[in-house]
Length: 580
Image (tube, rainbow, N blue to C red):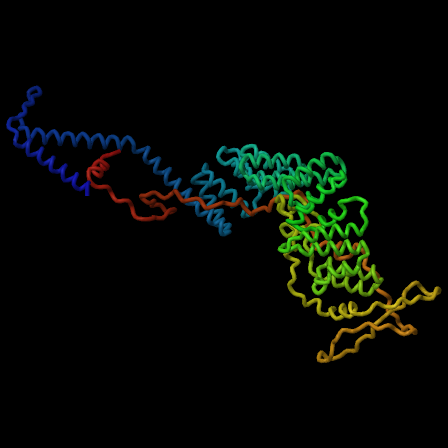
């Protein structure tokens, strides 16, 4: 509204000025040599306006003619730039949905129209990675690493290619170079930290961790926890070589991470050797409240050197009474009591604490029951039955990280190189799913567990040192509708059967379920821990398409988006028509 009023005011002033000039009397005399002209004032003003307009037109024509070559070059450059950006955008989208041929075609177009664009180099490298052309990808990444604006991106691409080629030395050198350029580079610091932990360079790993804290990559609480993990790993490695350094590392680690199980166990061991029994017990109790673990129970039982098995049992019962009821590892306290009771020959107490778990035992519960039967009564049959149940029983918690199960705690994951990845928990792959496979032998196990202890019979000296065989008659084939109740083992009469069944040998310790790993390690776990290798360098988001102008390109590589911008009106439009 204001513009309309202003425009009307200007028109009124122009009309008033024209009327005033028209009312002026007199004339203007102009002479030049023999030429003489004497127009009136209105005519002179009109001629003067026409002359000014002609001068402006002439100047505009000359200026446009002078600038025409530059405008043509700039227009061709803009067209090439728009085509390059169009190819880059659609090429990155083609990489996103895995179209190798389309990505290669757009990469060629982007390299032709925008050879110096960083995104064109990225598109070229990623299309080569998608095709599996490692040599071409490395060449492009080296070119990117030589440029100032794409140096970090090129180093990351070279790092990924080095990982694919199993060149651990080259990969860590590239990551260290990236850290020098940018200490806040997350991928580089993670890679270098994983490599140094895999090599056992704990001092170097601690230096990287301090650098991560200074760069703001981790917060203070995470820094304290991870530093405690690294110090614990160093203490475990040096406890047999340099006990002074190991003790200092363990003491600092338990201050930084008081709930870390290996740190608490090692610190309690050092305190016990220094006759600081009360302090050692407090360290174990603090970690036990956060995470009940069998290593903590064992350290608590042996915290005082020279104690009898009965005193160790009393101490373990004290620790188990402090187990929080809401902890998933509440069974750890009962298993610890049963273990100590067996060592103290308190078999009734061991059976009492294991009674709530024998209906659906875990592997450790079943093995403890087998040891009770073998040690208390010498019942090899019932011990073998419990051992057989242990094979198919539920798995106990174990140190697990990224799907890998280890028999001991480790500071980093051997799969991803992630620090402090191992957790004491039941492996996901070991959770109960289909128990149908145990139906066939459940009757036999129940029969052996329900049978009374067999009487010992002394064999003749001349015979082989084998106990008389106690067998059950073979059941005759019967239809499914008949009674399939468990068979009760019966003691044979004095006459031995014609074909006695030889007693089953006791399972060796190396083949017991407790000693057999739950999962088999991967073939590449012996290599330095590295992060998983992506197919291409991951892009956080697809770049915007800045190659579309407001006027809309009209060549065959681009499409018209939206409507052209309308010409401005008023005096602004008037002057814009004559502007350069």
